[in-house]
Image 1 (cartoon, one colour):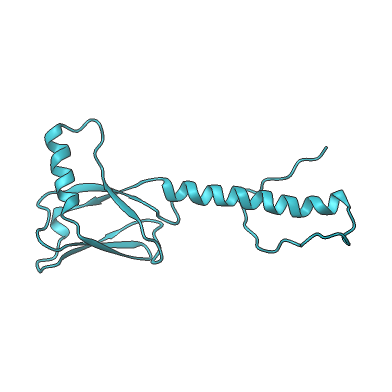
Image 2 (cartoon, one colour):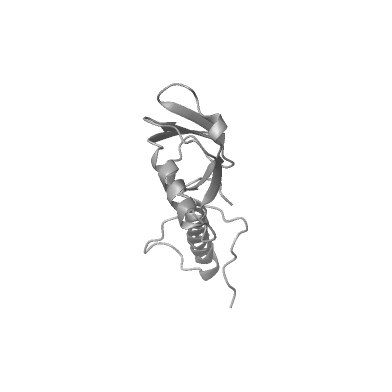
Length: 144
C-alpha cells in the first residue's frame, strides 16, 4: 500500500478533477485527487494554527502622538493589511496583581487599530498609556 504524501510546506489547490460514473476507476489516478484534498486539509490546519498563535507586541509609552486620538504605529512581523487581529493583554503569570491590573488598564485605553503590511497603528480616543506594555495579537497571517 502506498500512502499520500504530505507536502512540506503544505500547498493548497482549487483544481480538483471531478469523478463521475464515466471516469475510469484507476486507483493510481484517483490517488492524485485524494492526495490534493489531503494536502488541502494540512494547509488549512497550518493556516489556522498560525492565526491562533499569539504574537507579543511591545507598545512603548514614548511612541504615542500628542493629539487625540492618540496614535502609535508599531512594526509587527508577518501582519498584512487584510488582517483583523484580536488584541488581548499580555499578562504572564509571573506578574504581580498590581502589574496585571495596570497592563489590563493600559490595553483598555486602546479604542481602535488599523493594519497595513508589516505594521499596526493603535489608537486611544481618551487617554494615552503612560508606561510601556505588551499586548498579544491573534489572527496575524504570516505567524510562524
